Image (tube, rainbow, N blue to C red; front, side, top):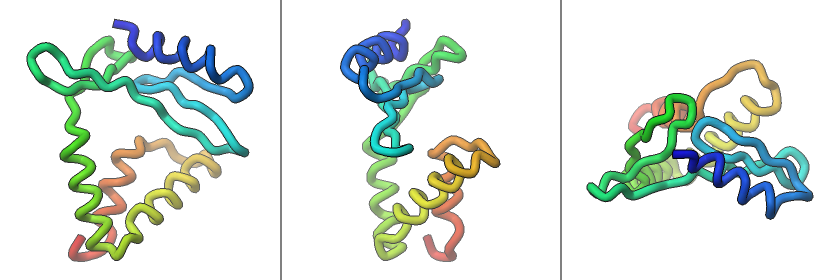
Length: 118
């Protein structure tokens, strides 16, 4: 079960000109002046569960990408399309200032709760 490592090796082959690094659940690909994208291996197991790989614990973490997408679209619509912009700004501040570490999914949940009615 080395899906993140396998992904990292594949990404490394195709991304020789840009940087990449292996993370716990993803491979981070750096591009265009401090921008990056995290690529997460998503698997559907034989029993139908959707999972992502947790390399640190050598385990699978269950996930629900369709549910998360629906939730995000609903909350962004309630915020007049500004929730995604706020989340991007907070992620930028997190990454550029390097003063705190918090997973993106937690930042998203926190940003959702910052305005009454969201």
